[in-house]
Image (cartoon, rainbow, N blue to C red; front, top):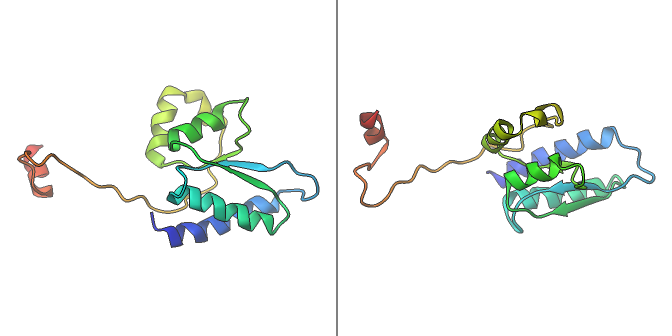
Length: 135
């Protein structure tokens, strides 16, 4: 994920959240992000800063990642109101929790994810051309 791009998108997300909020005595927005110091956690902390400028408190929770964020968002006992997730994790989660599809809205994309294709050192696959031969 491009952190600079992610931060600019986080600003857009924050502006969208601010538009519908009453500022006086709102409870904090609780954002479930990712591991401490990671890209998603950094975006959550930036969102917290931007929202503070609008007098809207935000609490940032670290997590093990997308699936924990979705579980928290789906749990009626959880204080989480915003979760950051990868698209493939959401798709996977919805397979096991189809009822969740009616319980959330996507506020938008923050950035693109980089995916690495790896293989074992002893594998016969050495480049993407080898993958095409295998199929």
